[in-house]
Amino acid sequence: MEFADRQPIRISDVHDEGYAPGRYFARGWVKTHRRSKNVAFIELTDGTSVKGLQLVINPSLSSYLVAEAQIGTGAAIEVSGQLVPSPAKGQKFEFQVEEFSLVGSCDPETYPLQKKGHTLEFLREQLHLRPRSNTLGAVFRIRSAASFAVHKFFRDRNFIWVHTPIITTSDCEGAGEMFRVTTLDLSNPPRDDKGHIDFSQDFFKDEASLTVSGQLEAEIFALSHMNCYTFGPTFRSENSNTSRHLSEFWMIEPEMAFCDLRGDMKVAEDFVKEVVRSVLQECAADLEFLHAREWVEADTAKVLEQVSETRYGVMTYDEVINELQKSGRKFEYEPHWGADLQAEHERFITDEVVKGPTFVINYPKEIKAFYMRLNEDEKTVAAMDLLVPRLGEIIGGSQREEREAVLRSKIEANGMPPELYWWYLELRKFGGVPHAGFGLGFERLLMYLTGIQNIRDVIPFPRHPGYAKF
Ligand code: 4AD
Ligand code: MG
Image 1: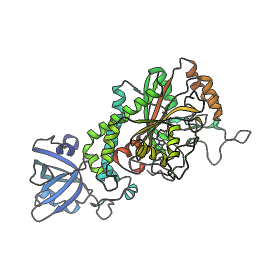
Image 2 (image 1 turned 135 degrees about the vertical axis):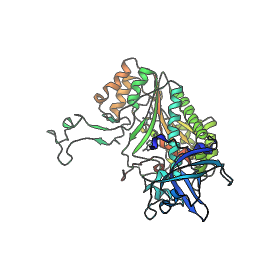
Image 3 (image 1 turned 135 degrees about the horizontal axis):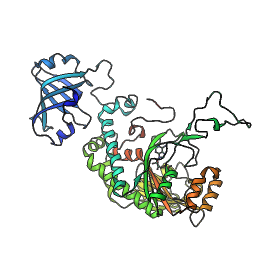
Image 4 (image 1 turned 60 degrees about the horizontal axis):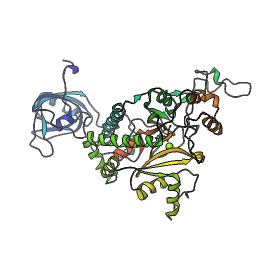
């Protein structure tokens, strides 16, 4: 019989009482193995649950005896036997093994993961093994469930999912934080008569980069399909070695036609609430496990309930600056009109002024991207950031500039070549309408859900300045 012919039980479903007692196969990896004279116990995991399945073995079972010395933590096994109600406390079922098979041994001398818990820092050096740890195992199940919740939210509202390009020739944020994509010989690139690198001889006959955002291309689809969204990897070469920044992260970017800033905020609030609610429901056991870790703030579960239920506050940038200035607080960065908000300012607003998630709107145009719609005061733009307690910015969005002349002058004022954005400008000429959208950093949302403090622990393969292993 081949592996594929045997249907193993799913351990998470066993805990949810999805199986009646009876004869089954079980397979997975050994978490712990201990034996006494008359009985041996193995805790088995199959990656579906923090809680393993308790295997009970008669040590004289010959298929067990031949393998016994090699059944250490991490070894892969398959067993058949009886699932029966357990007399032991803390578990409803146990599995009495009748046939034992060692599929892959695991050298206990060199296997880096031990029974005892490891620090997240240590696990970061074991990217190939850390999904097997309880903590990261739970995080990545939650990541998967949250991805589906994201798609479900948009599908239920008839947004189409657009696959925007990963290799691009436009800089959406205009911030020059792009990774170059080239096949030119770096030691001897072709040059034009001015001595500049001649990208017309490059693979794409153009200067190409990895995308920092799918927004500009998503706008194309909002103006054909009304409501759309992207969900994919984005890349930024900003040199931010912080616990909230990655060089490769996943972003969700909805874009809505016939929509203004109010409508944009409405979608954003509904979206965050529904994804949080859905993960709270679907990943209850994993969240409970994570929220009980010593490095998670004690009331994380309560804060999440709040995020999924209360109305979010709205403050203008002007009001925020006023609040900060009149607070009498000594900030590391003195708040003043025209400067970007620092994490300490954001935290003061969400944790002490509003005491909950807060949209900050109408930022000075100088500190925001070129595509945001200029307000009537001509000093601010129709931007919105959603700040959440503890974490700060989780969403950045805006109503887009739909007036061609205004947009053109903003592109020029930003020192960007308008001829590169000809198609973006044409969208304003050919049936352009007010439209708006936002971007949610998927890993920021996952930090919020899990209580994990470092963004490198919520993505399977983190990339950040100085690091791109695997
Ligand atoms: O505020 P940002 O830069 O906005 C945009 O990219 C717009 N084009 C979005 C839009 O309107 N369609 O980024 C959006 C969000 C941030 O709020 C943050 O959550 C996340 O993306 N983000 C990062 N997450 C991890 N690492 C980084 N380096 C990030 N930069 C932004
Ligand atoms: Mg932003």
